Image 1 (cartoon, rainbow, N blue to C red):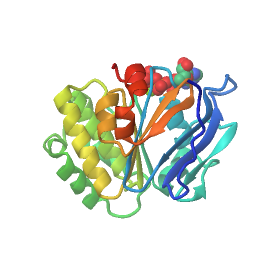
Image 2: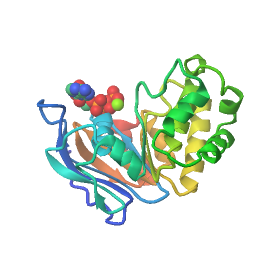
Image 3: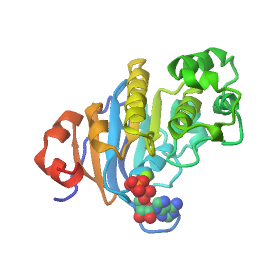
Amino acid sequence: MSEHPVTPNPEAVLIGDAMTGGYGTGADILHSCTIAVNKGEIAVIVGPNGAGKSTAMKAVFGMLNLREGQVRLNGEDITKLSPQDRVAKGMGFVPQVRNIFPTMSVEENLEMGAFIRTDDYKNTMEQIYTLFPILKDKRRQAAGELSGGQRQQVAVGRALMTKPSVLMLDEPTAGVSPIVMDELFDRIIEIARTGISILMVEQNARQALEIADKGYVLVQGANRYTDTGQALLADPEVRRSFLGG
Ligand SMILES: Nc1ncnc2c1ncn2[C@@H]1O[C@H](COP(=O)(O)OP(=O)(O)OP(=O)(O)O)[C@@H](O)[C@H]1O
Ligand SMILES: [Mg+2]
């Protein structure tokens, strides 16, 4: 099975188009990798460890210099923009690791998320507390003292503080129980229903594809399979090779 070229929907909110590049002067990790997400939809990236899923997310967020390819947000070429400028344009990113400030309180974490805002962000904070009520109860507590699932809620909430049009999540359910995973996925669906597009990497591939409008299977930095979540779940090859049968 070889890599296949993906033609993104030109209307997509966010497109990482034929991205090729790696870290610093090292070898390329991504090989003409294309990832896109439509408005209000959930796109999921799955694939084995080391496939380049996080690298693809970092490339889309501007943490990697691309040798080839483009990133477009709402039709605008943002390939040369810094991550901070991308946040200002409407991207929110929750990285796989170190995605909260553990010694700061929950509320301070959310305030840090609002760093680019010059308007009153209290309403946004209330919306986040409505979405994740436990965070309101624990708002004065150090974020590092929360459970794994609650910390992920802080990380997602922090990213929502800038009112992004696209929310990028790298393994939001890492290390949480199946029940907490289901709850987080429900909240992510709720976020998407408000019109925010979701691009997410998931290790829980089967469950994530269940809620995905679009799925991308990456292998060795390249697109291997691309289809709707349901079609990927139904594909015997995908099931056997990537979903454990
Ligand atoms: N900061 C870095 N500097 C150099 N190489 C890196 C860096 N981060 C990742 N890599 C390399 O890039 C490749 C892809 O790693 P990446 O973290 O993108 O994989 P992944 O699909 O997210 O894996 P996982 O499922 O384990 O999170 C690996 O070979 C890894 O060693
Ligand atoms: Mg990763």
